[in-house]
Amino acid sequence: MTKKRVHLTFTGKLTEEPILWQLSQTFDLVFNIRQADFTEGIGWIMAELEGEPQSLENGIEWLEARGVHVAPIEQDIVS
Image 1 (cartoon, rainbow, N blue to C red):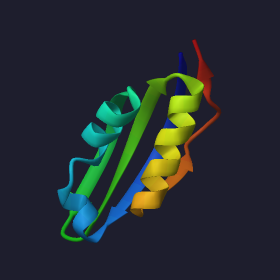
Image 2: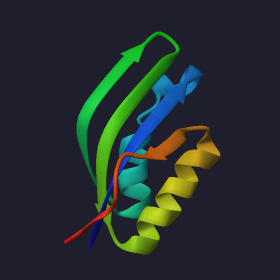
Image 3: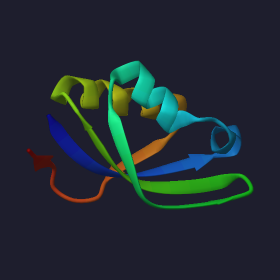
């Protein structure tokens, strides 16, 4: 299993959707929210995602395709 720390930025209707739950269910990933802030129309989450390397890559591509801006926080963690 691989862990990746990411900063996710959401805008518009995405702030009202259960994006991390959908990500978790679709790609068999575990997430741990480290910090988050949401106001009307915009939000961000710092999270640690854990799963198989290909699932992480596919999940991040899926987030970006949905309109979520994904930025790495630091080097990946291998466990």
